[in-house]
Amino acid sequence: MNKFARVTLSCCIILFMVNVLQLPVVAKSSNSFTDIADSYAKSAILAVSSKGLMKGTDATTFQPTQAITRAEWITVLERLLALKEVNSTIPSFKDVGKSSWYYGWVEAGYLLGLTEGKSSSTFEPNQPITREEAAVMLMRALKLKGTGKGSTTVFRDDQDISSWAKNAVQSLHKLGMMNGSQGLFHAKNLLTRQETATLIYKIIQQKSWMKSIESYKQTSIQLGWQYGQTTEEYKQSILSSNINTLSPRWLFVKNDGSVKDSVDGSLVTWAHKNSKQVWAMVGNYSDAVASHNVLSDSTKRSKVIAKLTQIAKDNNLDGLNIDFENVSGQDKADFTTFISTLENKLDAVGISLSVNVSPDLGTDWTEVFDYAALGKAADYVILMGYDQHWSGAPNPGSVSSLPWITGGLESLLKQVSPNKIILAVPFYSRDWEVSSKGATIRSTDITLGEQVGRVTTYRLKPVWNKTIQQYIVNYQQNLVQHQIWFEESRSLTLKYQMGLERNIAGFAYWWTSAETADVWSALHNAERFDRYIFDEVTN
Image (cartoon, rainbow, N blue to C red):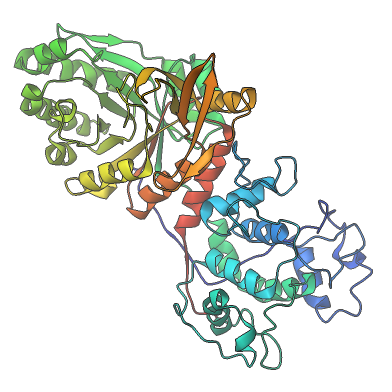
């Protein structure tokens, strides 16, 4: 089955360049530059431009002594890492507009922690970048640990290097990447295009580094549940996503032990042609009584297991995803037996089994789950990391704050191996109508796209909450107070990174089509960057 894979990279980078004030024009030939004859970096410029790693400022000029801006430098680093632009629905900085060419690059770098703003609300994208600022961003891009706080450098102008940059400067010097001149680093000098070309030239000669970056492939499980879409709509959503495992809601267990079967064979065929798996969801209609009747009756239970196995075989399914909700704690042992027996039957015919569970909060809702036993029995346990504040909850709040979902995953990891865990994250939030006393009047589930609509319609200005790591907004409609805890590319990236740090098997999304396009770019970047390992030794 799909497992996490790590791509080992050596310590260096391929840099790409953009024009300072406008999008660059790619030179037809590297020899067409008319302004590099006297540049000490001529050979480097020709080498990197011939490979398409740097571009001219127009068809015939390179402007080797021109400085690079902050926006251009972060763009360089992200292109070097083969990352994607992230056109976030909520801008992180007030001076980086959505219409600017660098918007998606600044957002992508900020979401990954490769760069920071000059303040909490400004990035100053067009300000030229200094050598020490560039060193800090480059160190982050290489994920170098460095020499730690309180570092000193070997440079004679060490006193001119900002304290926050010394670790990066010394680390990159040890790697032979940024050496300064005549024993001086010149920290406050602006980084030029010819300096960048010289750096790139050193790097591109290390063929294995380039090969390692280019060899990245996403190997984690990316499961997307179908909801409220036709087969054709679902296909289109899948094609514009990172999803490699489809989970249509096709099967439901009935009170008498029969199974409602709505399998669409054409979708299975289509998925396999597109190198994707199909794990059909098996539901229970959230019916506690019917579930008890089936699980507690060995005859009915065996009937369901046999039927599900046959359906999976006959339709060439790759897996089944058990989504039993609202099951009584009295059925705990029988539910575990059901999963264990079904897994044995499916395993014999090469079909995977995953089971959905909610975070263990010690409530009646999760009493049915023997997490450790389910982790041993099933191939995968999918943690449904949402509904922290459920629909109609007495007090409004986040669907999935970072501290809450982290706690839920940590609890599950104590009982289930990380290579068996898939973390499900929400592609929805809730618009809460709130009383004057702060209590819930009602709530409405909204997609990430509908969030954007509300921001536009009501001219909302979401505020980032550092504690729960989400944007929050308050607004009034028809004299009624509303609150939304946003899920979007920034909050979802943080959840994704949290899961990656714990080496889990993959991620799932409820529900496919509720997201906005920027989310897929952000999550792709998070995983790709996480997979890179940079050695701190150069040749």
